[in-house]
Length: 101
Image (cartoon, rainbow, N blue to C red; front, top):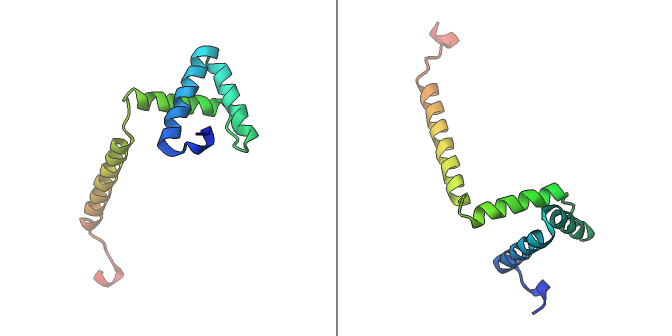
């Protein structure tokens, strides 16, 4: 199987592992620059800092330090609470209209 034939989650796992090996062997700065240039040659402009951020996110996920589905659920819960509070505030407000005067 050619590397281009691997797609989706399997490819993400393979690329993450390959990057970790590159970082360990050559250092973070070299790995970031190499991947940034490789992406650029393929028309994907990501600076070395962007590669560093991608690596930071991946390492946090692999270490189990974040669960994105949980982050989403928490945000949706906070938004729903804020909307409910806002609706409660608005519905509890007495409005004076010209007709009521």
